[in-house]
Image (cartoon, rainbow, N blue to C red; front, side, top):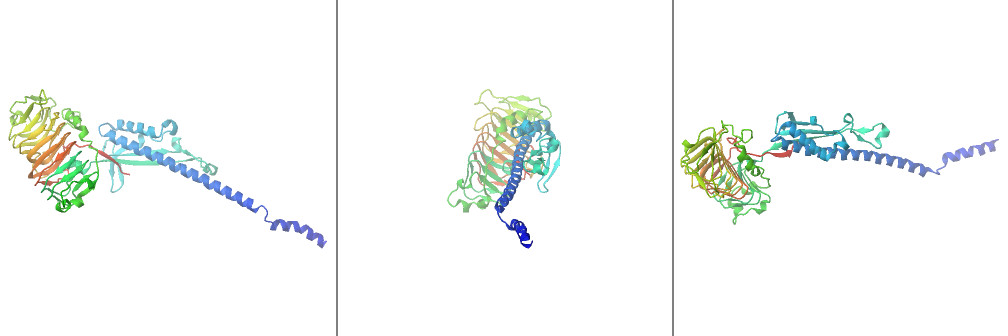
Length: 443
């Protein structure tokens, strides 16, 4: 019986101690684990892919909404955004990833990272995108469905805001070369920018927080020892470029200042009915009526007109297609003069033109010259909250202390003065200057 007991016990003991097939079982375990990890990774990777697609669509839609909002109602801007989003996430395939209620205009506080909704705002927009169960477009899963998760809710959020580059708000800007002579003082905040390169003579001073920018700062044209002879220049240099949106809008501005429905129409104009004046009339203070639009027409590009010396204009709009000369001592306050002449001297003077009221950056009193041609002011230009906007070249020689709040923007070349102080107002007293919004991702 004892031997028989041993014989019966041996197979059980052998099975417990046997290792045959262990590698197969362990391999099956690893395979199962690997498939589980791979399946989970696939679900996670797909979720990130979808989130990226939502973010891209949201960014594009937000940008489109804010661009459209500049000159359109909120409903038109939202419709534009939905069209753009549909290109990235076709509704037929992805469902309601973006709906009208997901597009909210408002104001963005960058410091607090807080968005305040405002239906009628122009300066910021928040766009939310989603693929979620409540929209019946959630993202399907592979492995997670075995754990009871049939779909993932994935959302995206974007905030775009408008901004105005300091250089275009107040400074000297040219699409081509910007040339500045010697002995100028550029006060803190003032900006000089060229989309080509800048050329500077010696003896200029750039205070702290001034900007001299161009696409590649190494392209700046200086005399020998120019970095040393222009105090503060190395610290002021920046790399950068801008699409000059405001130059492309000059035709719209010329038309808009005569159209009461346009955002360019000055608020001090009381009647849209223009007063016609002859190009050879005595164009002095008595010829212009406050609160009115005036037109001065020329039959050919060679014809000219002139504003009489010593004339002071206030709260008027002047449209002309003549080459216009300003007599000595002309002062423009709350005045817009637009010119369709393409002459390189469409606005010109011998000397002594004042654009804007000398009020130390106080509100109001600003004035603007806008032309499809060029501007030539060879002596004694003063600008106090003033703007010169031209498709062509601009050349000027400023009064020694005659710049305090100036925006000079050219679609061509700018050549500036020597011995002048370029004062900075931080945008104050320049409320009527023509500007174009720029757009950036805020959050």
